[in-house]
Length: 122
Length: 112
Image 1 (cartoon, rainbow over the protein chains, first blue to last red):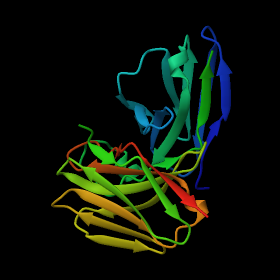
Image 2 (image 1 turned 30 degrees about the vertical axis):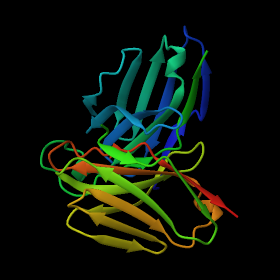
Image 3 (image 1 turned 135 degrees about the vertical axis):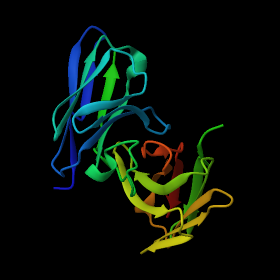
Image 4 (image 1 turned 90 degrees about the vertical axis):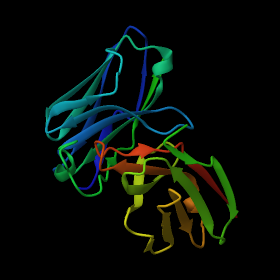
């Protein structure tokens, strides 16, 4: 299995709703990432989990809450979002040897991306 | 300025070669990557090059790296309509967290 699977593909929610985005990989990758991508823009890093621990939070508002229940799963819990949060949310994963971020890891950090969850906040 | 810069659009005729250019600022960049994104999809790694290499070829793709000028290019030979997509250049550095920094992407349009 060489894929990252994201569900749902599309999500429409109101500003008072609570929803979750899910991501799953079975490649044995120990680093998992959430990115936000607006139209015509590059992906913006939100969170990184390394060995199931949150290692990077790029000053993301608390209405986005990540969770890594185990090494294969990554969730993004959404609550009280704003219309400007509408975007494509991409999950990615990468191999163990590059998961120890900032600790002299070597090798290319090749990210495998999911197809994304298209979120619309009304 | 941005850490990784790319031109936003490129239009070519089917069968021609496409050359997508990228410049980066981090002199400690160790790996440079090219990703492809088709409409409504995630990013797919096309190829990457280690910074001590000048060139890497993989079937129709040729990557050229000029480390002195911090310039990276991706050449697609015999471009097909299926190559129409957004191409992202990215770099990761040994001095940082190894997380790639992406450019804004070049939209490649291939005309029949």
